[in-house]
Image (tube, rainbow, N blue to C red; front, side, top):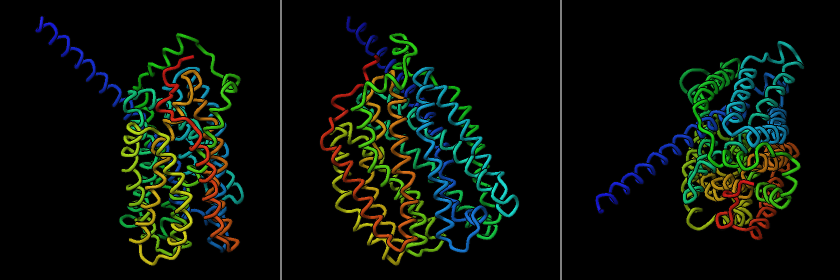
Length: 442
């Protein structure tokens, strides 16, 4: 009898181990594809300091960067369309197919940027082609977030959902890190600054297109989530915007909890490189090294905060971000503008990451836990993409606009106000860990 029980126990342990390995493999492949997509998207931001002059001829570097930032924001403006399109496909036909399509579109957009001629060659057509490429990338990324957030959260087991879902932002930040590593290698090893400005800025986009092809091949091996398959059996093909409208509270929650967090995230990532260069006055090399090291620090924080949320719940981390963001955003940015050395600048940005990670590490799983399976991808992706387009993608443009007017400090108040609005949402929302819709398939 005891021997039989031992055999059964060992069999159960083996099944659990196989299941865990399957989940980890799926999360790894899904995350790698996410990394590649965000690398492609952020290569634009990392190299904008070099190629802006090739597309926007103007003697004022701030105006050049503002024009480049406007196109960066254009990629965000179409993200709601991508969130709707890929969310519909993911909820209707499966997460796997939508993930493969999104990375394919990113590959095409990145390759298009790599071969686009400059303003000196084709005139106004150059920034138009650049804008088209950014729109394609924006569509891709608009679909990637909601679909990958849904896939990772559904593949993770309930006890560690916050930890595993945090890897979406690990790879999201990792994509930015890869873009900066490529920039650093070109700066320090392979090319001069003049060569990068002349033609070297095209290299990262070629690399991105090749990596996207690799990610596409890897994603072909993904398994569909059990939650999606169960939902399809219960009610096949019923996902639509009409059904999403039955969840107005959840949609508004996604908008409210995202607004302040996304504005802060893009301030300390895409805009920070320009801030260190144009406002703090650091060199190109110092700017790249500080941006890289602070991103690595922020990336390492994500799974730590995600694991903490599995123990104490999601709500307290969000409230911690909101309170600290309201209290310290203005002092942090004001002090950062006056620092003289790169190490002091790194410490201040690292402090900002300790605040912002309360949002970034768990925002994907919080949104996924708000919606039932049948509308999860579109429910997460569409309102998130809309909010990011309005408040995240425009953060850099707003900051540079205030700077061009000579009132840069007003951006600090703007960012604080956005975080304050989200804090009100955090205070009154339910803790999704304790009251999750992940088990609902209707």
